[in-house]
Image 1 (tube, rainbow, N blue to C red):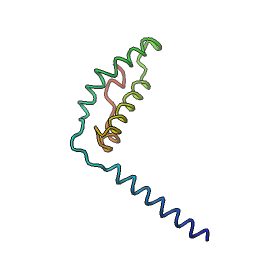
Image 2: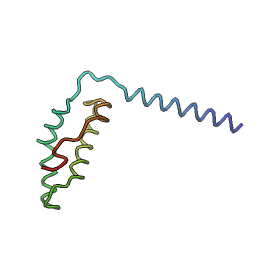
Image 3: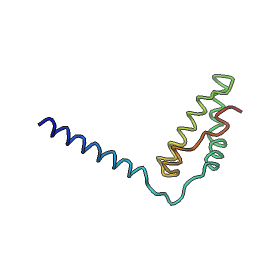
Image 4: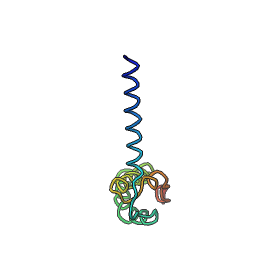
Length: 99
């Protein structure tokens, strides 16, 4: 009996993983390019990051910059503006390594 329940559990788990993988491989009509995302990030997000750095650290806060980039690209992916592949493979811009 336990083997049958375990087998059912494994089958359901595998089906769930396959469904999630299919959903991740969605096709997008248009995507944002890395250079476009970097331009937007530097123009609209980095000023706020630099303001926080000035207020609290007085030096570049590299973990904050990297986390901000990761949060930004996560939002792009969830909004369907970049693909899952782009999200998984894009590098961080130079500004995340300091000015």
